[in-house]
Length: 132
Image (cartoon, rainbow, N blue to C red):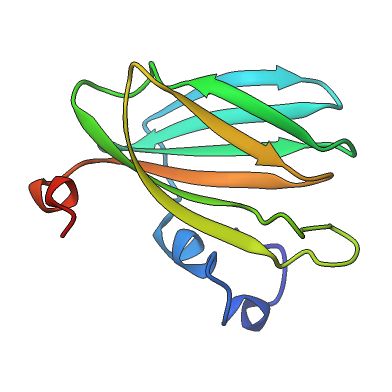
């Protein structure tokens, strides 16, 4: 759900995440939360997991375990606050990164004030591991 006009996302690198995110879920887990402070929630649809992290008025770095993922190697496609993101002055700044992870690791969400991160975790395909 995008709480805005669709045309505002037309040139955003975050549009890919909005297009791909499912609307129904098989499982939901709260990974970290403090009322009025922050939230990290994981939701599964099929084999893929989607994690959303958000913070209140204070910037913060949150680290959460990936133990909810299944066995094997996973690709994390993250859409995060850029270093110049500010909800009042520059709300559109988004950094997109791709990394290889396993359930034994942790993931980091570096959040600017009133900011967030969205991550899709999908099982790695052989081409992902070859760099192709």
